[in-house]
Length: 219
Image (cartoon, rainbow, N blue to C red; front, side):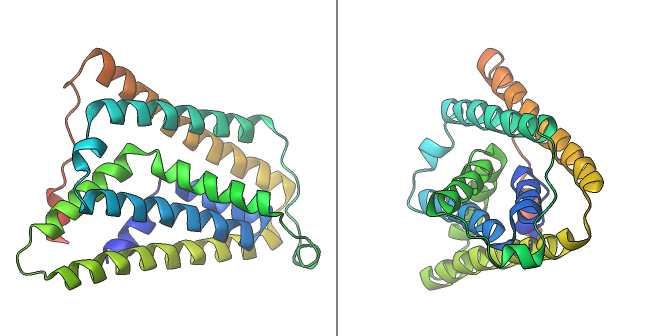
């Protein structure tokens, strides 16, 4: 349940996954999904082995918010300024291959768009803390729980990528232009919000209330 919940959280990685799958096909979307799941797995590992003091450091959060915000703003700007190309049709994609560099680029895009979101970091810190402090879970239960979450997130992301890929068959350039506009604006808002949070944390430390993670205990 946690994995499905996380996979359907509407954030920058969600919109990037949809946009990439429509423009470049299912394989590119799947590679981006691998990057997303890898960043999730990395944060689970870091939190689980006790590196929360580093990951939860305010200065680290400030740096991540700044870098993540800049990445999102630049990516959003490219979406808004570049004229959209017609999505490749199924028959054309059959003969189109993505280079290893292209796949690695999609992986990095998924990894950083998801990994540089401080909300994802806080989510996993809270999640790992709740699960590891629950005395009813054995170590094996905890391992299976987190593996199940990652598998669920990856499976749902693959489903979203495939659905977006199939929808590309009926998407026109005009509709794609509108979609790019919506996704670009959303990513711009996310990026500006991260930059504003970094500004607040730097000049007015302690002014922002931390996330309320009590709802996680009820799921």
